[in-house]
View 1: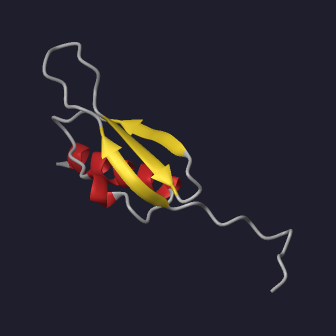
View 2 (view 1 turned 180 degrees about the horizontal axis):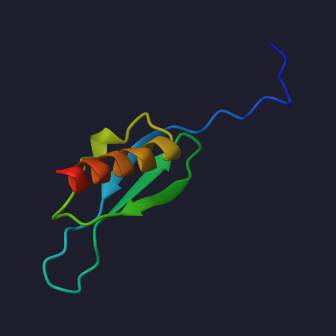
View 3 (view 1 turned 30 degrees about the vertical axis):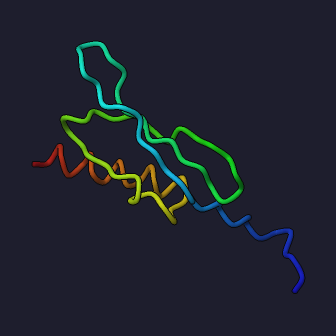
Length: 82
């Protein structure tokens, strides 16, 4: 099969995800979603306010980085509309 140099590259998929610790005290950092993609690249996808949104690492497996960021946007929009 020949490669098509004009075709867009396939986006790497998330193969592993973790969420950093929840804040315990005022001023503590917000939790961050950190992923590893199918190319081995580790990326901080976003941080969030845990009193507004919740995430589980398994939600990110198989997504692209763009889809992971879209997931936050979708949950954030639903929260703001509630």
